[in-house]
Length: 387
Image (cartoon, rainbow, N blue to C red; front, side, top):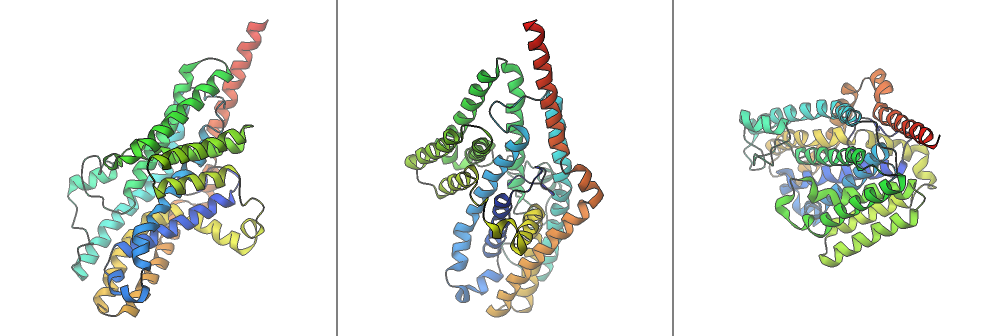
């Protein structure tokens, strides 16, 4: 998932919306199961469900990664031979616009996490409730450097926002480097494709097998890059080539070491590459489409706000009904529903309708204009040389 308050990629993509909607809900329930105390009390009512959510629901992150690469490529590098923006300043402007959309809700979520943790500590004493942060800890979280500097995260989703920023910056850097590669379109296409394939292969076969590297983009760039290739498969004329590359790279990685996360990432990339679901009426129209689009639209803010909600709702229900499985089970659903409301509220507050209408496609317009300008410049030079 490429994080955004509004989808900056223009036309809706029902399968992407479905993936974002479902993955965000799995992550919420993963954390509901992981962070007690309510999940501890309801254990015998839910059987192995809570254990499954703790162990496997976190794999939904792979859906975010693949779709993040897919959506980022649509805006920055839709095909390997796409024209390069006219200068690094354009890419920096695109990155800045993106950060202006993503950082305000991130800051609000950090403050909410600190405040809700304080409220939870006044209600109960539980090991999953964090202590009050130091100033340095708060600063490192604001700068998204908490893992690098070995500080505890203030919220459950902070690490992923940091990784997503690294991955997007890496793709933007690749676009910038193409300015210095030179050569004709065919040469640029070959170098771009080779670079991406090598990076994906290095990640899936090596970096992704080294847990200490999970604070850096190379650990995740394999899944992210599969999403980039899925976009290339849909936009380029060599659909079979890029679909095959997704299959081969995923298979090689699984042969070296079986990892469920890599298998899921490969499957999601294939779904996007083959445009599966395009003709599904239930997904493209009607009430289901409305629900999926809504959950997709608020997925980022729900991702940010659900942890503070879990802290305070869990503490309140456990304080009132510490031994009641039924009431704590109800508390889990209350926390889930409240997380959706909190995410919707934050999305609405930070995206006024007038602003959303004028800015939701701004990054693509900037890049698109630059692509056309660069193409026109190259055409002019070519014509001048031919004369």
